[in-house]
Structures are given as C-alpha cells and as structure tokens.
Length: 380
Image (cartoon, rainbow, N blue to C red; front, side):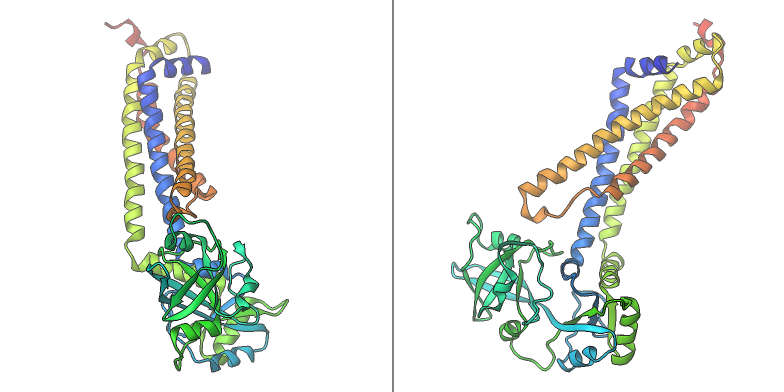
C-alpha cells in the first residue's frame, strides 16, 4: 500500500511540487528570520562574549546592559580586588570615539581599553599580528571588518597610522572580533592609551573584569562583590543575557521578526493545507476503490500520513538547504553579514513547526478519506 500511496502522490506532479514548494518556502522563511534574529541578539553582547577570560563583570548599579555605561572611579578597582575569592581584577574601558585616517576618512569606532599588564579583554582570534604588540607605544588592534571598512579594497597590512582625538595610533594587529550590533570598527588598545585618547576625567573606568579563584563559584562571588562594594556584579553569562534581554524588551526587533515568522507559518499552513486537501479530494475515487477492495480505514490513514510526511520531509530538506546556502553565500559577499548562521536549534525548531503545519494540513483531508463511501467508485 505504501507504493500505491507514493504513486498517487508523485502521479499528480503539479500538486506534489506545489506542496513541496509551500513547505520549502515556509521552512526557508522561518529558519532564515529566526537565525538572523538570533545573530542580531548575539551581536549585542559581542564584547562580553569576546572577553572570556573574565568570569564576572562589575559595573555601576544603574547599568542595565553593556552599551549603557556609567563610569566608575579607579578606586573601585581596589575595592573589588579586596573581596575574598577574587583571583584578579582588571579595568576595562568601552566607549565610542572618532578616528581619522591619513586619507581623510572620518569614522566612528568602538574603543576598548584593556589592562596594560594582562591585556585581558582582547579577542584571542587574530588575523595579523599578536595581542602582545599592544604593549608598544601608541599601539591599537582593529577588527578585520573595521579595517576593510576604513580601507576598502586594500590588502590587510600592519603599520597604518590613524588619529583618535588628535592623538597618533598605529595598527599593530588585525583581529577577528565578534561582529558588534552596530557596524562600527572595533579598536583595542591599552587602558592607559584609551585614557589618553578620551582625555582624563574623574570617572573613566567602564567595567571591572574579575576572575574567580579556582574552586570559587562565580555566582556566589558575584553576590559577595555586590554586597561588599555596592556595585553590580554579574557573571559573563548573566550579563550577556541581561544585554540581550534589554534589546528584546526595549526595541521592536523581536516583534518585527516574530510577525515575519508567524506569517511564514500561517502562509505555509494555509497553502499546504489547501493544496493537500484538494489533492485528497481529487483522489477520493482511488481511496474509494481501495476501500471497495477491502482495505481498512487504518491502512488508508497510514497512506495519507505517508504522503504528508514525504511532502514535509522533501520540502523541509529543500527549505533548510536554501537557508544554509543563503547564509554561506551572504557571509562571503558582505562583511557586514558575517556571523549570521543557521543554528542547529533553529533547524530543529523549524522541523517541529513544519510537523505542526503538515498535521494541520492532514486533519481535514484524513477525515474526508475516512468517511468516503466505497460506492463512489460506481457513481458517474
């Protein structure tokens, strides 16, 4: 009976292709939009994810996410270092400033100042040069996307000179930093150099990065730091989640993507459901003939479900393949689209959504088949 069911399905090529296209389109749209949304949200916490040496981020109590910075005095660093369970604590600066190239390009950049001695906070992924080169005078490291944005078409090279607030800066390394939420270049420098670039102020330290002693639970240590210093202390996982949560709650990004995903699901269910229903209606005589020959309702049900699962599997495979190919091609075409990828969680979730779509599409059709009268074969 399985062979008969597949012959019926493949025999009506137009409707079979229509069903496959409907599932593929729905799969492509849902997985594409959810993956882009996930990529955008991970970008909001890119600087946190790159500074993985630190277990805990310490900040002003009023700070809600990584881009909302209330500077602290350097004396807070000593207080954090004095908390029991802290292996080390280093300053970290994050801010926006303007860079000038010798060719006249004016570009806003994300300036990150890391501890002079340990260089904690610099991404370990380097394209050219070494993070240790930051110890040189006036040294900076720029991310690959930022280099290509400021010097389009030029080969990656070290030694280029830019000006930040009328101060000289020399590129000694090119990194593969995680893509930020904005498209600004990411520039790393020593904390002392960052202070020179922005100008000395009473409050200038953005965060304190903390490493817990071996065997010390970071969550317990974060609570101890908050209790003893009055500052906010979060593990890097909690701070990244808080940052992502801020953008989810305070922006229209999730609503816009959610509407698109919902439309993909609704359109897929409507198109596939209608097409599959028409397909079953046009084959009622064949199902009636099978019943007249003694085929049970349970066997007929399995045939219909087999047809539905074949359509769902083929359509899903095409749709998810197109989504993966989209991210692979766009990441090569545009540097601004790097980091977007099809996550396995998204692929699995989309598969579940497709299963729901095909179940919805099958419900009305199955009922029609189950109640069909075998006598339909003998009617005109």
